Image 1: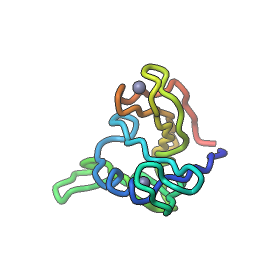
Image 2: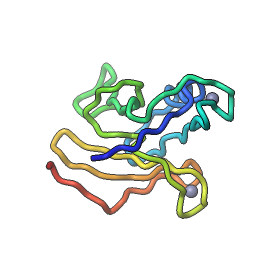
Image 3: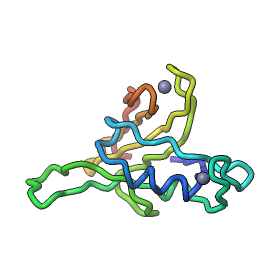
Amino acid sequence: MVIRDIKFCKSCSEPKLISWKGWPLKNPIPMLSILKGDRCEVCGGLDSLSNHDIKWMNYHGPHSTGLPDYWILVIESQGTWGEPYLDVAVCKKCGGDEVISYFETQSGQADIGCSCETCGTAKSAFRWGRR
Ligand SMILES: [Zn+2]
Ligand SMILES: [Zn+2]
């Protein structure tokens, strides 16, 4: 799969990523500020964070019996659950920014979903099996 390289602002993105928890393709993930000409228009920051380096991780609490309690977003280049920030696009409903996510389970089931902070999350009808 070809993944477009997007540079987000690191200082704006980190607090948003840390505060997210939920379920992939169910709870919308935050849109992040994209660097324009190597600079963030929101905070003026210059440090970048690649969309490839954001991954989902399942969180198991001490009383977990198998299913994760919830999921979190981590800054890591290696991950097994797909690409939360596969791409960014324009939301068809509200015209705002949306994030396209690719989620793959351990058994090879994969799904694409889009997250708009205004409209919520929509799962795409697109499905992949294990290649
Ligand atoms: Zn910024
Ligand atoms: Zn929307």
